[in-house]
Length: 407
Ligand SMILES: Nc1ncnc2c1ncn2[C@@H]1O[C@H](COP(=O)(O)OP(=O)(O)O)[C@@H](O)[C@H]1O
Ligand SMILES: [Mg+2]
Image (cartoon, rainbow, N blue to C red; front, side, top):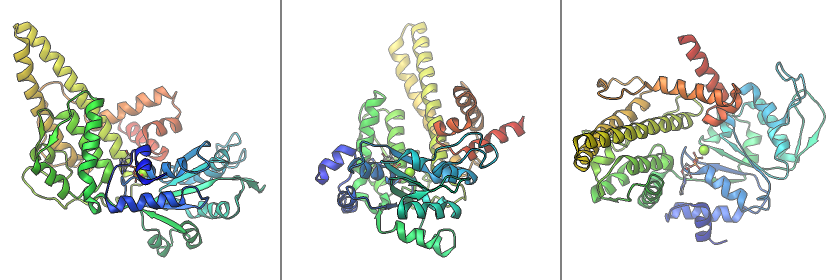
């Protein structure tokens, strides 16, 4: 399959040398059985690359099991991956099949492998070397036939030096490394990606596709994109949902970019630091989703109200036009505050305005409600709930505990 068809088939956008190089590498190694390490910052497309590697391999008709090593509680990761015998640990009431057994014949994608505890690394090395493993609490040797793909946003060489990652495993994993560069190192792709996502979201939300003004383009090109393509996609989504008019201006965009305010030209600011939290982008994504949904809901409500008021006043079209404008202004103001609040971990010192109309719940309340609804949907099953919310069980436990403590 040539590069163009590959891009077409997997929706991989970009014409930069960097992305071409990545895709050529994918084409070279996809059909082999080699273990591959995909390396790059959060949001650069590592998972997308892993999907492509699996889909182009002989194993494509079998499962691709995606495991986020950073999202599984440390004490559970070995039994999750390799299974456990009944009674192997407190709470292990039944025998548990691990992912390596389930995925036999297929592929396992170990995301955030840099988060894997050392004891699990020993077992992983063994399975990579000869396909052998045993369940936790058993010495019986089992065999599996799994191809391993791994990803990390860390410098594993440095992790080895720091004693957090086994050197032998690192050598085993690094036979083929596919490095996916951050977006700021392939600026040629920025506009194409933005237009692609904007168009897609405009269709999804039934709004019109709009063009970027020249200064808006310049801003997108100068911005640092700490969250890479994931962040760019979110910005495009907000533009599609929250803006109207026939062009996106620089000012429109500023309010959507992290750490770039209307007054400050901080275009190489905010590097997402390692906060010690293992899945900041997942949580950020969750909060982002919740906020966007709230905003959409509010917009819907306001539009209904506007239509009603217009009808009451007997001049519905004009009322709607005036109203849309004020809705847009208001949402814009809300959006301007939000990125800072997320960045500052809720400790924003931006003075909050009193809500004028339908008051918004606090982030915490929204999150609490989302979690309790999800728990209800899964009959209180925390594992399924955590999966559905895209957070780790550990994080879910912590949050439930926090909510309970607050009560
Ligand atoms: N080159 C690309 N073209 C189109 N979409 C992309 C590209 N790279 C990444 N994406 C999208 O960006 C988002 C983040 O990518 P993902 O693979 O989850 O990143 P990572 O695993 O490195 O954090 C996903 O929605 C993915 O589909
Ligand atoms: Mg990822």
